[in-house]
Image (cartoon, rainbow, N blue to C red; front, top):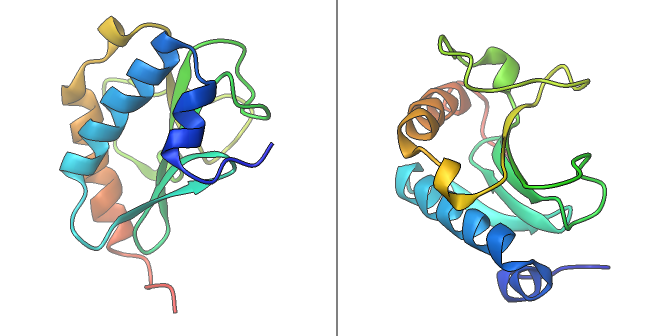
Amino acid sequence: MKIRNLVELFSILPEDERIIVDVLRQIIIEALPEYCKEKISYNVPFFYGNKGICIIWPSTVPRGGIKKGVLLGFWYGHQLNDPDRFLSHGTNKQIFYKIYDTPEEIDDTPIKNLLKEAIKLDSTFKKRS
């Protein structure tokens, strides 16, 4: 399966996952500065600036490592200031994440705070050439 755009992604997702992905995308898009972009990578929405910032991985898409819900992962989560321990980390030493099972679980405040941290961190990375 090769997903090339959001329409194709949304067409395979069950309604709950589609809503969660849509809500998370809106929060991220509103928070990211102009230089940051979104693309479909690994068949899921991937947000990057100078380097990867975050990824949204619905469980319906294979190889995400989750059985249900939608994962919001921060590429450099291990370097983010997360005093409330909002993010979890599994076997990956770098990517820290939060899994949402329902749209009602989404609280945009901690997400926006972590995005601010991630953007600040991304600005310290050298631009891609």
